[in-house]
Length: 534
Image 1 (tube, rainbow, N blue to C red):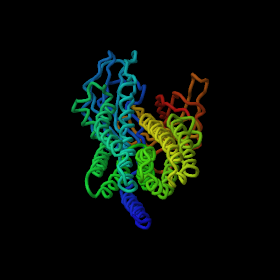
Image 2: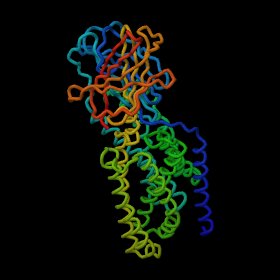
Image 3: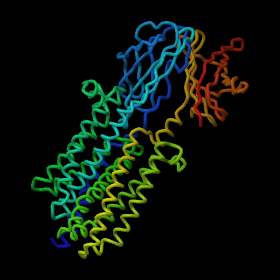
Image 4: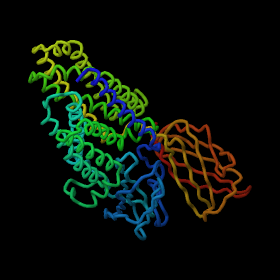
């Protein structure tokens, strides 16, 4: 094949990838983040005079409940199956009249990025009692299985599909055929297994329940199911490209399927703005497969000193620079979106994993640059010693790539700083209900520092309450902080506001509302509100 035809083929590949990129741009842009609970009724640690008839959980984005449980004061768990979902609000019917003492409402939902999110809150009916146990220990066997499944899926998508693409477009021999087929088969096995493990994680169930139909139903309710579906299709196309005619078209479709699978779910693809992050994940995944997948067949061809190895190396060298440029640019933008602040690289688990990945990438890029500028030219000229050294160096590159896969798989268990920042910006809220008056208080953001408060007041029977004045009083006696009194203003939207408020420390504060109903009638209602650390 002439150089002109080779360059034209590479141009066709990138034109096809650009077309797929534009198709992703045309998808509806929906901004999703990691789900966070922003308010609850009853509020955490609330003390109720009577048994509630309904529980309400409000999240910062739409969620799908997976498991809702009420733990009674004696430790008996009761599954809650009567609920209604309206966007980010989950309204749950109480299981009859609750007894006296402290209860735990435990919830597990799936967020828009496909990852399960769990939590619990305590409330008491009448006098508080000792809180029943409601913590979930870390299921290490399940987490290890999820990690292994993720690494195997990456190996199939990147090394398998990328290898099939390299064999179809750049290689003329069959070196690496068996390794590529093994990677693809491993990926095909890992994809459905990973879906089942996702279901176990979603329900908080052990590995022993892997075959439970409820586990697979839960898995199918997450966006990761779309990733698995696209991955199976892409891996199947990659495997077919090894044995059927038209292998170039099949392998190109498989490469595009890799990007689609990765963009269908996950932290990066769910980040805002969707019009940018989803296509970038697509391009990032396709670029990784293009580069990493070519390494095993190229290394084997050089090691075995096959006659077509120099030509394979030349084709790879001519096309890899723009691919690496796409890889670096897309990865840099996605990292900025996810991390936001440089300090998060060390202060968060996600950032530390990213830092470790970047360190390995620096080593990998350095090694690749050495190979290109010192070994590629003599290896292309057929020098046996240079070919052998390059084959050994490529083996080290493959080991580094696999290590990077392992680090990236760890992100499955760590919310990105972007999601943590969104959760931190959510308001702290409380609801107070008495016979004389009721109120909803929202403090934004819900952490220590400068904040604003929004107050909605009503009568005890949910009627309008036309107060003459409202004063917010915050105190924290356990920290020696005396009451902070701030008069609220009424901007005209039916609420009362307190701006320019500074809450100096995090923790549980006592919030009191002094509601002046008339010149001779003052109603005071009070409840605790939890302020997060800054």
